[in-house]
Image (cartoon, rainbow, N blue to C red; front, side, top):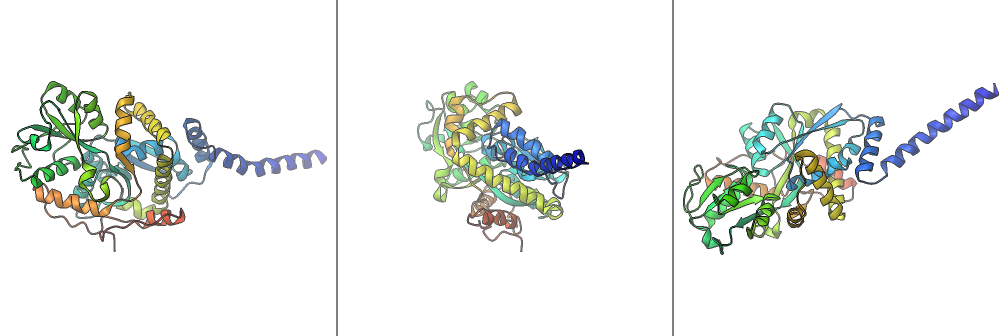
Length: 368
């Protein structure tokens, strides 16, 4: 009998110690070891309303919130026992296709594909539920051929994809200069050459383009090849802020698993806070994830030049999304869209309020 009581006391002590152990693992901080610890905690943690959540993002620096949140285990930690599954994409349209095909539930994506995806579905497929990043887009040129902005006339300038966010921005800038370009063919006073970011540096070194209006890290890769930054797009926007990366979610998933969406947004808010508090560690973390995803990290010269131009923010900067839609309409790439209901910021504002941070606005484009 005494032996049984001793065994019972030991069992109770072990049970009492378990929450403390889990708490200690969860508070280890961030980094590769912390990520492993958080995965162990997640395996034992409470499962939310879904067994898993499938997240999509791009392996580039304007999606660094996703890179860091994944690399450091911050997103998984907030999800507890709900498993995070990640897919990466190289273009917005393919990510929208994945969302429409129910291959992903949540995605980090640029404003133009979010707008296009929403309007083509008649407003039935997605909601924007948060922001992630602002800025990180530059016009870089061959300094031997182009010394001023006026010198762009008659030159060949690359954008990543027909109708993508940077393509729209460049066509709008050309229009405001009073120059003419056919939005479909890219021919006109400036030749707009749609070129995949992966091959843009080679196109530049071969002389087939004279510059590019591109996001980071492509812009800084071109600089290492001798190009010069002629314009930072942020200078064209009020307060130098414009949305470059949003967070979208399938409307079905949002309706069925609001707790999971809220957990992801908590992870995003904590990740952005950590990035802004520890920029050097965050830069290294993003580069480590890029190495894992692409097989090669960015060189120090590239990432050191690119990182400061990107601002990580929870605010989706909704007014700038409307402006970008207006630019696409003016360029002839888009019929005037009805964006009413594209945002549902209630889950994000709930998270921000709990964190003692100010709420964000939807510019009148939220669900009613």
